[in-house]
Amino acid sequence: MRIDIITLFPEMCEAVLRESIIGRARNKGIVSLVCHQLRDYAHDKHHRVDDSTYGGGMGMLMMAEPIALCFEDLCQTLNTRPHFIYLSPKGTTLTQEKVRELAQYDNLALLCGHYEGVDQRVLDSFVDEEISIGDYVLTGGELPALVLADSICRMVPGVLSDDLCFEEESHYHGLLEYPQYTKPAEWRGQMVPDVLLSGHHANIERWRREQALLETAARRPDLFKMLILDEKDKRFLREKGVL
Image (cartoon, rainbow, N blue to C red; front, top):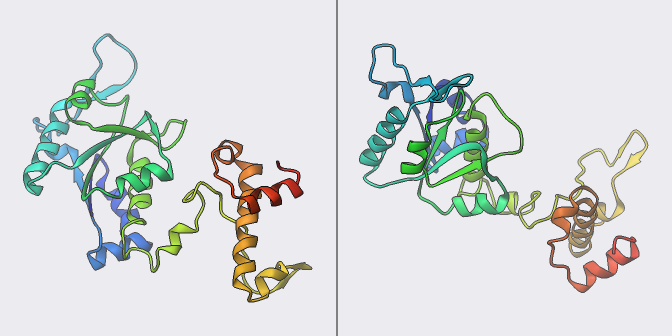
């Protein structure tokens, strides 16, 4: 998989992308993440990529032409058209389901907005979809782009040591993750649940499922309502007074 990030702050993005799991995956060639300085596609000597908005109002708007030129250059370089995403507070809210969908693409391009946003004409002409990471406003699209890139790269085979590393995490199956514990078995008078020390794998898996159900019901009732429950789940939840 290759992800290209169009940004005014490539150094900011690189500082994150070269670290930890994603950094190691890049070094191994499992994923390719390339940051493009949008100012390199500006026409004037000052490398200006923004201007005032028609109709008045506060702030500046990113111009269409530098973005178009950058994306067209990228398409020519790759000899294909990446799926183009604009990180925007107006976009569809990012979910794990969307991450799984985007992980199926071979090439993605992410546009990081700034100032008051982007000229609508380039969005209409080039962008395939807009994605938001939540209902709040940030200074620019770099942090959302990094969140999106990280979440997608984790789904690429070989990035994590085993598929279970992401399959058992929160949201992958519509559930929040169960509580987890490490050594020592007793910490300040609090014990690790006996079932986790038993070595009985079937009981452990059932306990984890039940705890994930309780966590989701308590913390994210919106997600809980969409779960498909089997008879064991229903019986357990009735005993706990959830159903």
